[in-house]
Structure formats: structure tokens, C-alpha cells
Amino acid sequence: MDSKGKAIKQVKMVYFSGTGGTAKAADCFEKVFEAHGVAVAKCQLRRGQRPSEGKEDLLVVLYAVHACNAPEPVYEWISSLQKVKGMPAAVISVSGGGEIPPNTACRVSCIRMLEKKGYEVVYERMLVMPSNWIVPTVEPLAVRLLEVLPVKVEQAVGALLTGKRHRTKPVWIDRVFSWIGELEKSGGRMFGRKIKVNEACNGCGWCERSCPGGNIRLKDDRPVFGGECLLCLKCIYGCPNKALAPGTAKFIVVKSGYDLRDFEGRTSGVGPAEVESLAKGYLWKGVKDYLLDNDTQ
Ligand SMILES: Cc1cc2nc3c(=O)[nH]c(=O)nc-3n(C[C@H](O)[C@H](O)[C@H](O)COP(=O)(O)O)c2cc1C
Picture 1 (cartoon, helix red, strand yellow):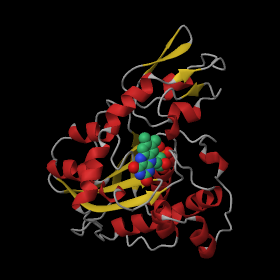
Picture 2: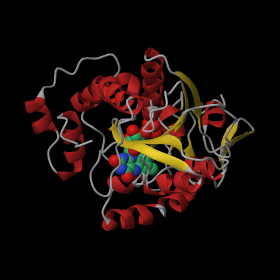
Picture 3: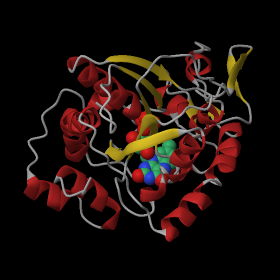
Picture 4: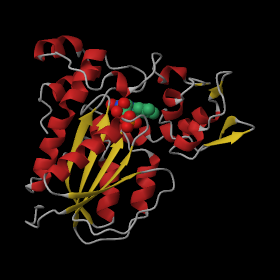
């Protein structure tokens, strides 16, 4: 049931994922809701996606955190929603760093927009997946993050189905950082224009078909990048021929690549003491709290 005691039978779930972390979380939510007898209509967001009609009792929005914010297709989708009266909604952000400042502000704009459309946001939380930018998550922790995902999702679904509210209040300085993070969107457009194609490209068109920004077109069997890049890094990490590389801001891309299949289905064998020693320093505090269950959510 929701916070007003009405049973939740049908969920609409929309998600934005670049490199698969959020997609994996969304799959897990779908499975857990269905195991509780709740039907799920799931939709992956791309640029320009418009909402479809539905008879849901709950809206769940999931997205990869980009510079302490939601990616553009999430905002686009919410702004084209019809107004509703008090429909319950949940906002789940998926980051590499966890619920630490200024990440704590990454749901503020999204929640405000949903509330303007008449949604009642009853639940928000951060999930953590391996980091796909700048600093990679060390392997044992990455494996552990995938291992604990079903537990975290079960907790969230349990709270949603029993009408437990969970809202947070980020401090103003995090909101300022999140607002500054919006600048990443224009940086992203530039990043996309400069992506380089090497001789390994065989014109297979995977990048054109997969880009959630609709930013890639094949011309003479070579990808050409426009100015609509979302900086999700899907094309660079996912190219089947490893033919794409950044032409600028190279530090953003993890040198060893990023493929969640490297960590899937494995057992980490990592206990609390190893988590403490592997997740050292402020950068990894959110990951440590999440894995040790101290993230107060
Ligand atoms: C451009 C960009 C910006 C990011 N910004 C943040 C950030 O501000 N905080 C954070 O913790 N993780 C950040 N990340 C890491 C992702 O949120 C994280 O790896 C997430 O699991 C990726 O989800 P996906 O695989 O669904 O795309 C960023 C990743 C990218 C590509």
C-alpha cells in the first residue's frame, strides 16, 4: 500500500542508464516488485522520450548520477508529464560515490519537478554501483556492490509497499554544487563532438543504435558525433571494436574500460574489515557506509 493506505498493484518505472549500472538496478526492482505480485511497466529513457499513458499506482524514477544531478532525458521526460493529483512517486539515484555531499543534492531538481506536476514523492534513496568515471571502484568492492544490490532493492521495495516514507534534506551548499554540476551538460556536448574514431572501426553501427542521446550518425560507415552528447560514456566503453576514445577531458574515462560483466555472478568474499581498508578516504566514504549499512537511509 502507499502512504495513504491504497494497495500498489501497478508500477511505472522509468530509468536512464549509460553504462548499465542503473539498468541493472531497474531490472532488480522489476524482479522484486513482481515477486511481491506487483506488475511493472518499465521504460528506458532516451533523449526526446515522451511519457506514455498508464494506470499505475506508483511512479519510480531511476537514474545514473551525473555531476551531482540527473541526466537531461530525465528532466525532459518529467517536464512533458501530464499533471496529476497526489500520485505517489519514488526517486532512486545510482552513483559511484554514494550518499555523500554534494551527491546528496542529486535528487533535488528531479523531486521539485515531479512535485510541480502534482506527484507526491514519498521515497528517495541512493544506490551505489561501480564508478564509471575518473576513479574506478577497486574490483573487490565493485563485486560486493553487485552482490548487495538485491538486498538494497528488497529494502526499498519493502518500504514502498508498506507505505514507509523516506525523504532527505540536503544542505544548501550541496544544492549549490549540484546547481554548478549542471554546467557538465554543456561540457558534455563539447566532449561528444571531440570523440575520436580509430582504425578498428568497422562501421557496425552499434554506437548509432545505442546512443541514448541520439547523437551519433554513420556517414560512409564511420560514426559522426553531433552536439547532443549526454556524456554517459556508453559508446566509448561499449564499442564492440574498442574504436572510440575521448578527444578531450580524457581523465573522465576509466583507462581499464568499464564492463559490469567483469564483476557479475562473482562472490567478493569481502567482509566489513576489508571494506574498511579498501574504501579509505572521503572519496569512498559513501561506498563504505553503503556496504556497511551505515548510510542512514
Ligand atoms: C559524466 C558522469 C558524471 C558522474 N558524476 C558522478 C557524481 O557526481 N557522483 C558520483 O558519485 N558518481 C558520478 N558518476 C558515476 C556514475 O554515477 C556511476 O558510475 C553510475 O553507476 C553509472 O550508471 P550507469 O552505468 O547506469 O550509467 C558520474 C559518471 C559520469 C559518466
